[in-house]
Length: 373
Image (cartoon, rainbow, N blue to C red; front, side, top):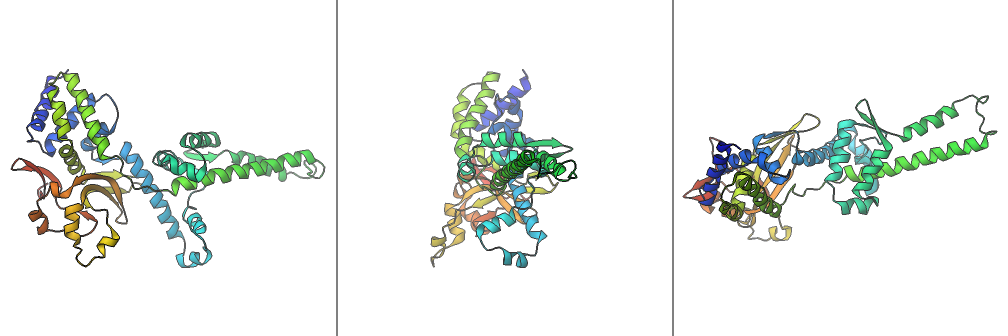
């Protein structure tokens, strides 16, 4: 057991206890402690993220990569066609949905994309949504994909192609080899094979369209889960090193400030996606805007954002795709003085903030604009 590691953890916990910690304290605490968390959960994932801010793997990456892939496929589908001409043929919402989701074949799918869409994407989907629109739960869908797909040369192929190939092979035989008029039973079996093959393809295609056509913008974790798991994880490290258990209560009482530090540490991190494109994570001020309230004559978007807004982490990819990673319940006004805010007021309900560092000012943890950071 490393004396240096114990000392580093203890020093960080002392700062948490006397409320002198900032984001650098939390960076050290999580990176040094992460190997001693017993379970692979949220806090270990956050610790890995802070240690390696360019991510191409991990729990968060799986969810975000899947959402990005779905966006990307629809975007590419739109670019393929003349929208004005296509819109003349599209009469219903179902036809529009089919058009938008036609970019991926059910018969042959590149291996990496298959895993992102139908493994990671399936996990990111609420079970209730899947059941409502397919009648299958996640376990059943996984079994269907395992049963009806094989992987070869970097691609997943639907196994009904084998049935189709057999049927076509018989159809192409000369009459001297196969005469459907005379071999009625065989012809009937081949017909049944064709029907079965089409039914399977149709069912799986329908399931896949639901999965890749459903993009949910919920946070990849929630604040209450963080509050619980930060206590659990640090308790594991404290117990392993025989550190005074009094610090457990200090972690619990300071969990919101610790969360803010983690969020500022993740600002400007990068995700690399399956197509090698990159996305940046940014700290922002978020407000769940009330449209009716916004119509009032005395509505001041800057003041409303400050009074009611919370701190969030959003992702920006290719300047056209923006969506949340995590929306906290940490209020802006608790970490930024109004006077400071009014010097650079923000007005939109998703505003990228210039205050991206968690630092101590007169012993109070605040957001600051660290231009040297």
